[in-house]
Image (cartoon, rainbow over all chains, first blue to last red; front, side, top):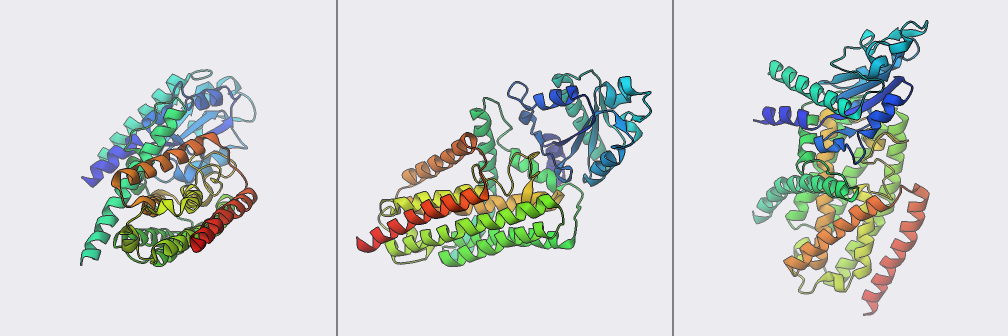
Length: 147
Length: 282
């Protein structure tokens, strides 16, 4: 029963850490807009904790480049399991218009495993919330598979 | 025997009440910001999730300190319900608070270090106030015993109005609410990240949260002693006080520790001393 409650709680309490890899800030503004009264993600128990050690879900915006790929990896490693990663926006997905630039590695999935991709340039707040909810469903599946 | 049963009731009921209060707190805060806010049970979901996470520590001191903090705050609540001595409760609670800081100091992270130093200053600020509140209760009732104070025939707030205000300062600091939320805050992603709790993670952060619920209930329990003669007025006093805390949290910005030390010690100590002199003379 306790295990069931913990599994249920995982879905009900996703704490988020947001990392801007090298975004134009478009996606960042949309991500932060989710916290405003209009979208109010706290309804779902989502909190923007800003601390990888407390976070369950990592939101990444922007292209990954050779300078910040280590930072991204470091943040991911600091998060205790179970965790999920959501790549946001065209740049986070594939590198976007910067894909062929000499300093760009590409999308977030070149460095860390990504669970959910949220497209858009910039991604809409509704799409980001949908992405988080989708990540939680994946979470639940993983938890149930693990027993 | 009765004391043991009461203590056990306290151990079980306090975290349930504390968690519920944390949920209601977030709901009321959301209402003030014209948002819908999380479910009332959110605090329990958060802690259950934290207990389900992978244990990850910087060093073993954190495990020890988190457990000691929880044990000390649970023990202080148990002692309160068992109607023990206020001074004993006070010292047990203070020991727990210091262990929580030691755990934060055990990690090298600057956020954790700064948060820990600030938490120490917060402890330094509210402890003398609490002692003076207890001293006032002793002068009014002639005892430090929780049971005797609860059995006092008149409401204490009539004799200790200023000391009640002093206690609400301690409550605001203990709840880490604005303007005194600089050791850690409920809203992360600021200059301090999560301050003193930054380096606690997973199940150990869960322990710290539960300990915090115990402490909240302890301070509210002390506040309830001010109107112990009538259940209705006591409830009204507690609800009113907590609502004022939430309002203050939403209406004020975070201040600096220097401001807190100056403001709380000057105004708080002055009010406490005036109340004590008044008690002594009258």
